[in-house]
Length: 314
Image 1: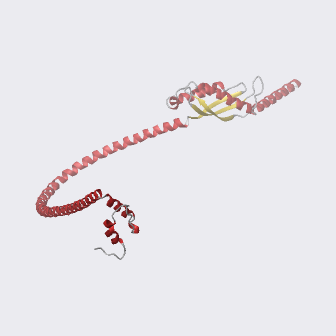
Image 2: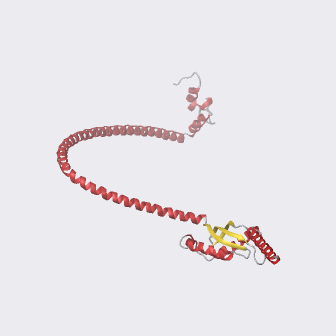
């Protein structure tokens, strides 16, 4: 009985130890960490931003207890950055990663992280690639291309609808035309009669207008001839007036020229008289005549007396 009691006590102690070990193991809870890696470059140098979610848990290993969660979290970021850079460098160009090799790229990133993140005290249960962001200029260019393709597709559909509508309208027009042919023929005959009537009326109006225009042209020609004749008369009259003025000026110029010649001849023949004329011109304002010495006073007596006040000319 005593041995049985010892066995029971040992079993109880073993069960307690197992339960304590399980409780200690469950103290490390499972975690999901979202990690963003920026400026991760592809093989052609294009930068990417990648966001992932890691489902992980720290566990005690045979070599010792697990490291703190903060240390494990930093390890996840550092090892994840190293892994993603190695993977992205193998992919180029960027348009293939964006389109044809996108799924292959994401699967490669996930596989590489699941392979390289785990540690003896770090269990990685799953890795989810949340987002892959491409450069704004690249995505904007692709959006513009996509919008352009969408516009071209819309234009193509609109053109197809327009062609279908045009075909339907053409069929309807043919049917309506067949119905309206009889009415159109009757209307055409009526319009032909009206057109002939209108044509005759217009011919009469044109004849009247041509007659009026001919009369107006005749009157205008007569008036123009009259004005031209008047203009010719005025021009001739003005020319005669100008010629008379020219002849008059010539006559006056001739008289003045003859007087100048006569005065020059007189001065040449009588130098004393020429000196007298010069002195008289100089002293004309003071009524004084300067006579040269040695002159005959009787020659200029009459001239001096004519200048004195109170004397009259003989």
